[in-house]
Every structure is written in structure tokens, then in C-alpha cells.
Length: 213
Image 1 (cartoon, rainbow, N blue to C red):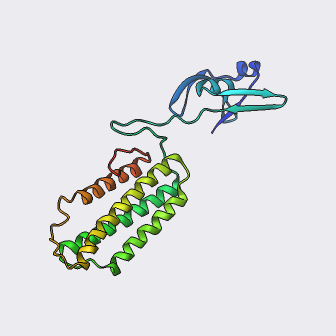
Image 2: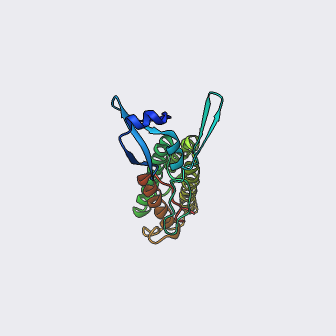
Image 3: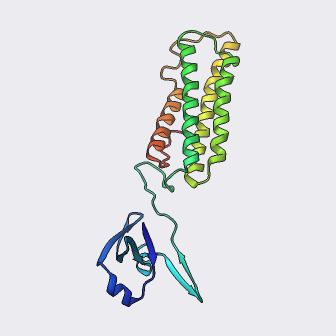
């Protein structure tokens, strides 16, 4: 464990084990680091300099101010936002993605096998996805969470729109080809969004590549 410590110059001179390269959130810098009884300590003012923070001294109080995290990246064609999802949102998002995937598979199987798409069995898939989406909304606490939630919502709405089309066809007794989903633009959009969301979950990083818009 690395502990912050302000040491008198004499103590540092006596105990220092050399200036080392300290890396904080990917930002390297030189700082005096010492080891006392198995614990590592870093000189506070050097740490502040590395992270471009600030120190304020008032009576017996020391205020350390660190800048907002800059651990964001801009992938090609992507939108720059802060990286990283909260644990609860990531779990809820994965459950929502699984629910939409099962919903789409059920719809696809029904169409390919010529089964009528009825409200009675679609309602259970749609209801589960709606419930999971609500749970993801509650779990969204970070900027990345909220941005990803919007994409999850878009995926849900597109899946509902696709399903409603075939529900209406069944009610109207319209013929539905077993290949109706083949190269269907909306279905392709749902698949592309699913792949994009899965990639975000795997990397724990929000990247809007436009697939879910």
C-alpha cells in the first residue's frame, strides 16, 4: 500500500531510498519514495506536482485537491467521454442485453418457422426487458453509465418497434415470409447495437460508434 506522507527534509534525507518514477493514473513523474517498516510512502508535494493538483495550508489543516480524471480515450469514429462503468450498472446492463437477445431470438424463430407472433408470448420477453431497463436506469450513477443507458434504451425501443411490426402483420392476417428478417435494416441495426454494447461491456468503456443511434 502506498501512503501519502509529508516528511521533514531531514527525515527524507536519512530514510530516502532514491527518487523513483511514480505512475498515477498513467501519468509518470519523479517523486521521493521511502519504505518504513514495510510500508511505502511518497512525498506529498511531489505527488501533487505529478497529478497537477494543488495543496492549501490553513492552520492545522491541509487540503489536497486533485483534478478530475482524464482517463478517457477517443477511438476512431468514437465520441470522447469519461471511461468506466459502475459495477451495479454493468451488471444490470449485461442482464438487459441478455433479455433483448432472448427476445430477438424468440421473434426470429417464430418468423422462420411460420408461427404467428402473438401478444401473449411476446409480452413476457418485452416485460422482462422493460424491467431490466428500469433496473439499469436506477443503477446508472456515472457519466458513462448514463450515456450507455441511452443506448440500451434505443436498443429496447428498436426491438419493440420491430416486434410491433410483426404483431400488426399477424393481427391483419398478412403473410410473413420466413426470410422476412434477412437483411432487414432495423434488425441489422439491432444486431450492430448489440455487438457495440457487448464490446463496451467487455472493455468497461463507453464508446459511441453510432450503432445504437
